[in-house]
Image (cartoon, rainbow, N blue to C red):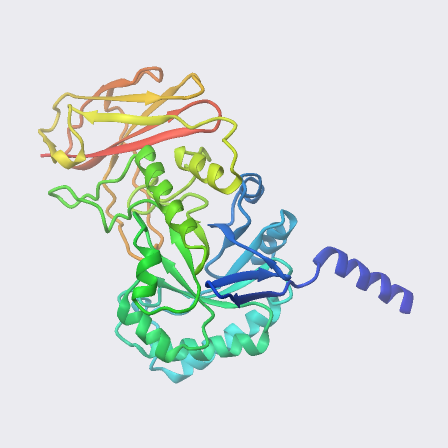
Length: 420
């Protein structure tokens, strides 16, 4: 019996591993994250797919937002590839109906958190606890920060081996004051911020945050911070424009070694949010854009094996979205683009006309994808960088372009237009 127990225990330890010890160490010049006593700078991505690829590209961590049926599998797979996990536990949000003045609901959520921490705290992939995400989005009850303190204290009691991080929607001086006052036990501030984030290293100090921080989500300019057409369609960057934005953001993240513990780029996957291409680092087919080249070079200090195509001079009737392209139904339209491919790959052009989404939400909530129109192209040669088409039905649309290089890479862009 003892021999059988010993074999079982040995197998468990071999297959599951040992929990790591993670801590935030204050240095003379700032802060440092230590994992099992060694410095650990997060080169991470928000998402749970293609983990082997993330590792091969030089990433070392993933971020999740809550638990589901795949949580155990995700943790095990991350550990398999030597990746750590900032384990997100979803806190109820006021905008989604959670009431922080309801004592019964608050206590029930705390106990739910406790059971989650107890269950997963010894998994070897755990790096940090992500305590909620953007609880400040469209909120009015500031008691959430007092309650956050209760959660953080409980987690410290249950698991002294992994620090806590709470994530805000952007950076706000008033919220920093509230967190400093009501959530003093919080170890790390996570900031979700998009577009040009070069302001962040300086702002975090000016606003009064004197602890370390992580850029918990970052990426292209968000749909809420870009120019819009006269009918309200947010103007999305092309994949090449996004790549340049990511370069600037990477420089900002790497510039603050004293207080920034790393970052999680968003989204390591694909989703519909205003469009199907806005935030995903992959397309629906799994192709990668020029943005991925930037990440590979930054994370690994190596060049990608094959570069994604670059897109420029993408126009519809010699105009772009900012020109408020408005046409009569049935009008003939011509679109053209210039593509540069460093590898001189054979390129295939995929053109789509898709109605403007009518299911736009906030906070990353799930949206339905509109379907492409059929039969609108007069000629859609996959080898041609020019296309003619017309749309008869009144409405708001986007002309999408996907330029594939045959090696899993793609250039993307879209132009908004309106039929009257």
